[in-house]
Length: 202
Image 1: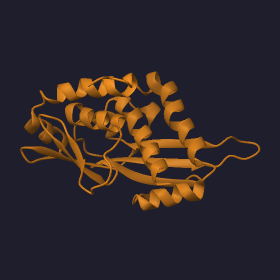
Image 2: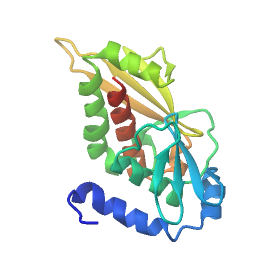
Image 3: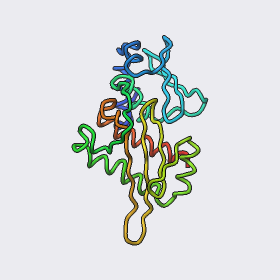
C-alpha cells in the first residue's frame, strides 16, 4: 500500500501487521469479544463489526459504512491490548485515571474543547443525534448523554451552552473500568471517536 496520509495510515499499518501475530483465542478471552474461529465480532457505539483474522478485513453487520481508519486502528488496539474489567459503578474524569495528567493538554484540545465548540451551539441537533444512537439522556449540563463505547465500558458527554459571559464548555467522563481496561492514548481516541460519531449522526 502506498502511504499518503501518514498520520492515519502509518499507525494503522503497524497495528494491522501486529494483528496477524495475535493469539485470537487469548484476545477473545481477555476482551470478552466473540470469536468464531474466523472473525471477531466487535460492538462499537451500538454498531457491530466483523473483523477477520489473521488477514485483517472489516465489515459492518448492518451493511452500513465501515468506520474511518483511526477508528479501525482503535479497534485493532482494543483487540491487541485492552482487557475486560468489571465496572464498579463510579465515574472518573480523564485526569483522574493513570497517565491522565501527562496527556491532559492534548486531551483537552482534542476532546473537551472540540466537543464544546462542535455541540454547544447546536444542542437540539446534538440531542437528536444522541437519541438516534440509543444513548441515555442525563439530567446534567445543558445536554448530557451516556453511551456504551464497547460492551461494559461507558462514557458520558455533557455540554454547556456558552453565553455573553462564559464560553461553551464540555466534560467527558468514563466508567471507572477504563482506568485498567484501556491505555491513556486509547481513552483520548475513545473521546474523539464519540464526538465524531455523534457529529456524523447530526
